[in-house]
Amino acid sequence: MEIEVSSDPAGRCAELLAAAAAAGQHIVVTGGSTPAAAYERAAGLEADWSRATLWWSDERCVPPDDQLSNYGLVERALLGKLAERGGAAPTVHRMRGESGPAAGADDYERTMREAIGEQLPRLDLILLGLGPDAHVASLFPSQRSLRVKDRIAVGVEQAGLEPYVPRISLSLPVLCGAGRIVFLVTGADKADAVARAFAGEPSEGAPGSLVRPTVGEMTVLLDAAAASRLPESE
Image 1 (cartoon, rainbow, N blue to C red):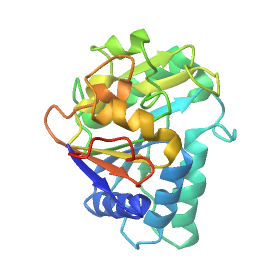
Image 2: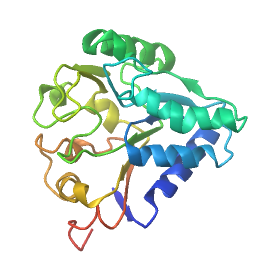
Image 3: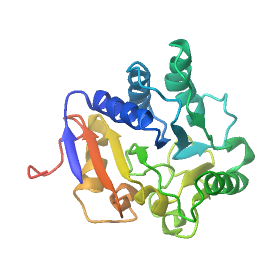
């Protein structure tokens, strides 16, 4: 695990996303205001996205045009910006949150297996945020979804944090199996969660602490405020 603390973690994230897109990789995107800033900047780096494939780490069970939709956020911050600049669009596989948690998870599992052709697909780059409770994707503290090992996607009937709507999430084995895992976390309100996820013992009480690469590498991009409670050695 490599921890990078800088004044511009979103800029560094944008560079990683653009490089993965130019390489035609399978990229997993996520929701959140900090990732949105990275998407906007990645769209302006003039990378060729035409051979890239976008997947989602998780989704709220709402229509794609709902303000709570993670797909909608990426559409506005990345896909729409690419279109405005005349850039080629990547292949997009959104989670169908409007189908509900169980059916939506089943649909995404089928789609990913058909597209990648593996029982447990290995994505090239997975971008993740971290909740103030140290949840990751839509895997919340102490929920049984953390213990699912035989699924690509899981339905989450009850979110552990606002907004309290059902979710769809990639499973922990899929998150851990990526070629590169990138966490992007900023702000003092995430400092405790950052310490629990990246300097504490693995625990279901802090799902971020359970995301560790099984075959690839992991980069944690932080600003100084988010990193403020990490041990000095980190």
